[in-house]
Length: 120
Length: 108
Image (cartoon, rainbow over all chains, first blue to last red; front, side):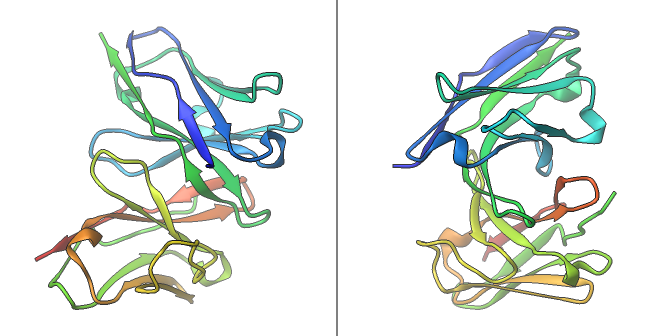
């Protein structure tokens, strides 16, 4: 069945970096892009960026530009999200999601989420 | 940036109808999508492209979109519908996926 499996929880110090993986299965990997969305405690969903799993093209949310990098590995069908210079307000659950609907994009399948905790 | 405003909370009795609004300037010109999120779980898509339901989503979930307001309507509300609901659009100028502020639906 179609699913996206993410890596496990992370605890990092302020200023460090974190890299979260997302491995989709159940469909052809390169057919759909992947978005990353995060949710701080008690807050709404925040879109972080998108990557084409076909050619690696990326789009990033303006407020995270320069701190986030999305990459894809077609040999292992895995997508990665790296966030640098971590701050306490980066503490959140990070989700990957399959991006669907050219010209009207939405997320039709989601990973289980990865808790990232940033401590000082 | 484009801001989607939702009421923080909606309360409804079982069997009644819940209406969740998503307001923004000229939102009727966008395709609006809706997600349901239960505590400790990932979001689930319940309506896409204003009014279409993914397979497995009950017909009780319907969407509409016109002018400055999009609406998710949940008919014959059940206890299992208690969750947070988020609207979302794709902003063409920035390629950003924009989420609404979220609405907590409580079943009385």
